[in-house]
Image (cartoon, rainbow, N blue to C red):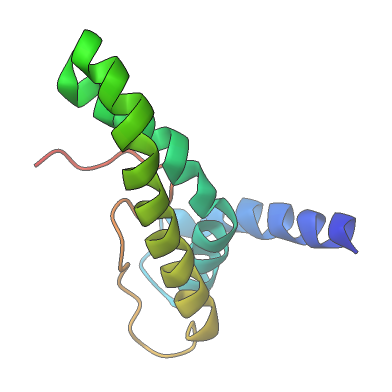
Amino acid sequence: MVRKLFSLIIVLQMLSFSVYAQENNALSKLSRGISNFALGWVEIPRQMVKVKEEHGDVAGDVAGVFWGPVKGFAYFIGRTVVGAYEMATFLVPTYKPLVKPEYIFSEEEEE
């Protein structure tokens, strides 16, 4: 059962790459939801690295180890909840992404 679910997630993730370049539509919302729901946990190590880079050398190491997981866990919960919401409402015509970046492995836009 777990193997079939994992295979389904991989196939849907691969399908999302073809939709990625297109406009936002129901299929892109569904694939974004699946991706964010399944990969939301990646926010924890991602935020550890980002916090470390923001604070510099020594202070960054300490902040990355202690503040990074806290911030990452909050982002993990948010991305997972948004992913579940987008999977449940992918047919509702509000197709703009709710989180930035749209996919966990996408580059963030510089502000």
